[in-house]
Structures are given as structure tokens and as C-alpha cells.
Length: 291
Image: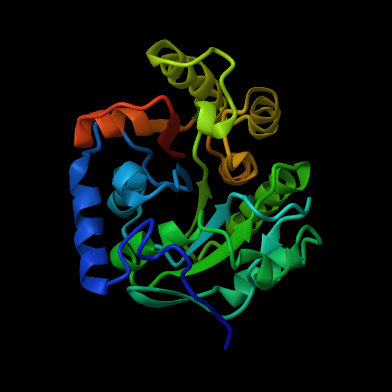
């Protein structure tokens, strides 16, 4: 059985099981849910930076799902395509994924249904160097130990939105199973390091990245506008995984959701100031949203 091994354990999150669980608990405890939630949650958007920076927001989304849904059979995780440059979504359709918490099985039956849509390719090799899905899996293993996963790389292309709608349709037809879609993206990567400084450098520029550029993408997600999320990212550079987020939103829309709920927002500069007492000329935005 093929099993994807972790590539960022020990970098983005701890490589030892006990330390990994301890940090998951810490991430979950850092934030509380302060807004009304849907009766059940069909989808969520999570960030994928190192847990020190964005783990509390990812934990917030998974905690909200646990609170409202109790058990989940499968998480469809749409990941960003940082090093995969194809236009079709890439499905990891067989085997398992390995993390410091052990193995989690791929939902092969759901993978077959997704591949039968004719959208996407079943190519596990494309997942080897991508971290945006991997950093979510330990949260799932800890909070939903019986759940399976279906990892899908979703490039910033129309096929990702189309597949999102198809996945929503498939989920709607499987009334006996509880399946939740997750879209993994960070938001504006601002500063000289990222080659993106349209408003210059300094606190005002970082404020613009958060309050204007990131807000535009978040608002489109909350309003369930997947196609416009792709165009906004292409025009404004406000997401690194727009295809992943848009696919999750498309699935939520197909499942009858009419509006998303923003649970929390922050950026790496705010985290640095709060946790390390230092600021930076760079910043990356992070949002936690459920549908």
C-alpha cells in the first residue's frame, strides 16, 4: 500500500508524536469560537503556515467542525498547488498518509467517485512536495481519529471550481456519510521577501494587505463566490491557494450553504508582535472560515 510520508514534520510542526499532540492542544486552546455557527458545517477554509503562526486558526476550524458535526467520516482536503503547475486537480486516490500521529487512510471509494467525474488526474506523485494538506492531517487525526481523508491538489484554474461543485454533488448523494470539505490557503504574502510591495514597505503597507487585500478575498469566500475568488487572487495576489479555497466554497454552495462565517483573522506580523515582541517588513494573512 502506498503511503505518503511527511515532508515538513520537524519544520512546520513537531516530528515527535507527544510534541505534536501537545502543540495541537495548545493551538486548539489559543482561540475560542466567538460567533454563531451553522447547525452543521459542510466546509471550511484553513491556513497552512507553520503551526506557531497559523495553527490556532486551523485548530479553530477543526474545533468548530467537531462541535457542530461530532463525527466525520471523511475530509476532502483541497490543497494549494505551490509546486504543481498542472491545470487539472490532482487526486491522491489510494493508500494512506503518514504523520507523527500514525497513518490515516485515503477514502478510496470516494476517490473513485471523484475520478468518475472526468475532472482531475489521479497522480499521488504530485503530492510529494506539497505541505498545504499535510499540516492539516494531524488535527484531523487528533480530533477525528476514525476519519479518512481525500487529498486533492487544486490549482488556480476553472477545473478546481468545477470539481468543487462535483464533489458537493457527490457528497449530497451520500446521505449516510458525513463528509466535510477543507480548502487550504494562506492570504496575501506581502513584503520584499515575496516580491510584492504595491503599497511600499512599512506598517501602513502591511495594514493595507490585511484590511484591504485580504478582506477582498475573505468577503468573496463568505459570499460564496468561487469564480470571483480565482479572479481576485489573479488580479490582487491575495491568496496562494485560491483554487483550493474556491473548490471548498463551490462544494459548500452546491450543498446549499448561502453564507460563510469568518471565525478569525490574523497575519504573521501580528503573531510575531504578540508572541515574539518583534515586527517585520513582511506579512502573510491567515483566515479561518466555515460554511
